[in-house]
Image 1 (cartoon, rainbow, N blue to C red):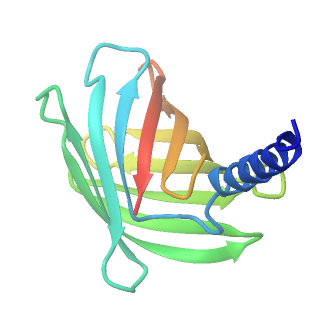
Image 2: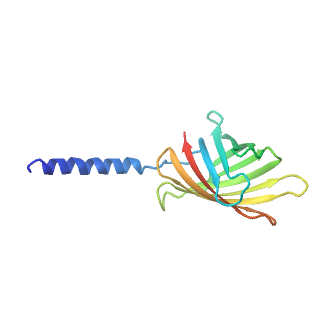
Image 3: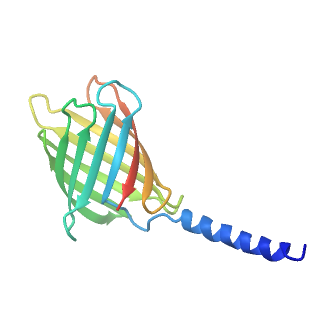
Length: 171
């Protein structure tokens, strides 16, 4: 009975320390990451793997996506990240395979919830019909290495919007 108070104290302090480190989100936005993506609607290309990383210590970002259903919708892009353009927003301008170019605006919302991020992107495909699309994403970093994201791709035209869930590992 006399050992219960020290045991409870140590247990409580350990739990509090673990909860604080488990909830710690990264201080800034991470661009070096890999992800497993799953489309929640539509039957085309439901699962893919994505990766992005800076080249050395520069702001040049290389990104790629590989379709796991072998439909041939793999892509690679090269972009430049302008950090903290305005109000904590990072802007990435990119050009990619399949004659695409785009801009992505991304911001951490740590003042609302630690680890929360929001992103908006506009992508355009050069070709005979100049297809364009908007992508809206909400992401939550539940640890420094792991995050989950939900995005909606809204294509311009008659195509149906695509919802996607991504599990990512930041390195």
